[in-house]
Length: 172
Length: 346
Image (cartoon, rainbow over all chains, first blue to last red; front, side, top):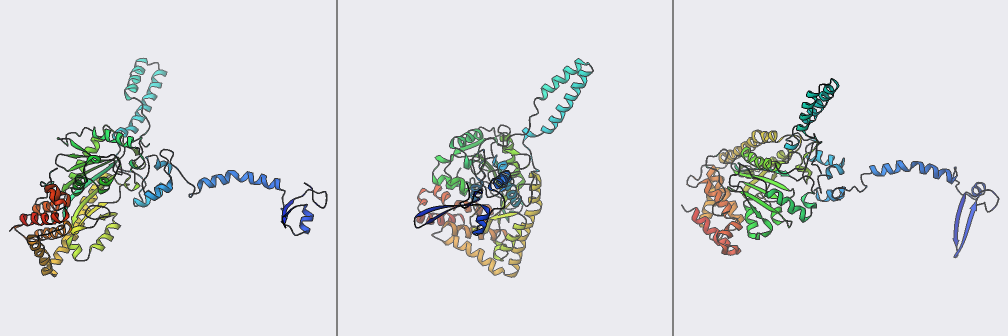
């Protein structure tokens, strides 16, 4: 759009409503400055491009904002609901509301941040089983490479007896 | 559950029986893969009940457990369970599907669908914290053999309230602390307890009054130290210290103002032997003073276990269970007075 007073492109656009009549004003930088308007130093298109570049950072900041509503994907509980009741909705809430829940626990538990007590039977020895499985697989590779097929068969049987050394579970 | 035969009571010469009324261990557990009780559907709560009531109790509980569907009990029966400390008030008043399993000698109770899916609790008379914990742990292990509990390697056993996360174990004792109360030391003890991460609560737990100067003391920390260390600290450090404080306060009271002490004790006995109408609260307070008198060797003719039994029998639901007419408040006051008069007859 051109300036109302010359052929230069308008950089200021204003709608004036007076006595029930509407009038549009379009001015170039020079005529706008003459009439006391503050003219942007950079064209709008350039400003928009700069703003667009900042969007990912703004989105990341919104994610970090503690006031932003957080909801547990497992049970739908919000952190605000937890703060009101003091009770979590499901085991998954412990992960969903990190790190806030970590702070709550640390405060309630005299600064402690790690469990050091008993482990359920089903998880006991899990680390041992993982290590044993890795060692047997290594020995199996070596036996096959050395063409020791009887030994390799024995090692394969042992691996089958050991079963799958599954990762930790149960927290959901 | 017979109200006239209260749960086993401490022997006169039981360890620390003068101060420690009973010991309690409680373990909180939740089933993996299900929402906690507050967020679960009724169907999921029923599913938990189905799982837990099928736990083989093992050799620690030879008679097995009797499961009571709490939703089908009367208000009087629920009150009876609360008075026996077999269930919490919260559990008794809840409206969700719930059940409680009780062993033959009423020392173990397993609340299903309290704040957590399982609240395994053992209460034993006197100072028997280790034994109480071992009994609760026996059921915990039996349950864990058939149920996957929610657990994370960082936080330990996951509980609905983060204040229970970790080992999920709460150890507690009910203490009789008239010496500290009468000498005005109770507030100082409460402050010291807070620094030691201990909770001090009233007769029926959180939010209740310390009726008769009975206080429940329990650990607040459940994370960062294992069950055995928790037990060791409570048994070897916390409890002896509290027992010593109370005994010192009683000794100081007996030395500085023996007449005041004797007056409290004998006035209580006289009132209980003469009263024609007695409320539950008044009876509890007076019996608590009699208990103090026995422990201070002022009442050689009254047995401690008799007073312990009366402390339970004078509670409203116990009285109403023995005599249905006593459900009426006025008749209850009369029946309570008669019960106590007969029991304490010289």
